[in-house]
Length: 201
Image (cartoon, rainbow, N blue to C red; front, side, top):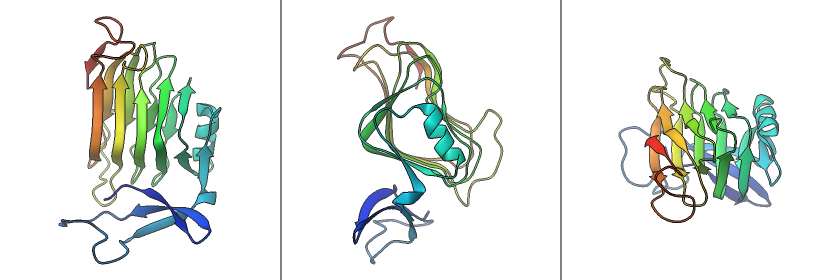
């Protein structure tokens, strides 16, 4: 499955979500428009400066997808996605920082969630995890419609002090991880032996 992307259809912005391919190689668009779904922008909550986790979670619970505009989003509670097929797409490496030691993003053991184009920056209070896909002991079969993490990056230190025990935990079966960067800073701001501790990627 290729990563979802924003595009302009006439005068309307939409997000295209490519279908999962099997036994395939090469680009999905070689023979024209790839198979997939176009989702109108009115089915998204467009996350802008000042949005908090409570507002984001309420939008997901109302059945909306998430489109994060470029920016840095400080949150004090976990962004929770328990609805199958939810798209959470970041533009311009939209950055999420958990300020008080919470997990930044938790995805339920459900089909087809797409996380893409997001940077999670550890906050100054240690988070046990930064991203979780599925709860512990998750056992559902998602082979037909897996959750995917694409261009999802995690940084501990580098821009400021940050701590996390484990960066990404994947418990859901069949999860696709495509192009991640899981990094503990060894330069920049907010790094040091005790400043940006990170036990596991």
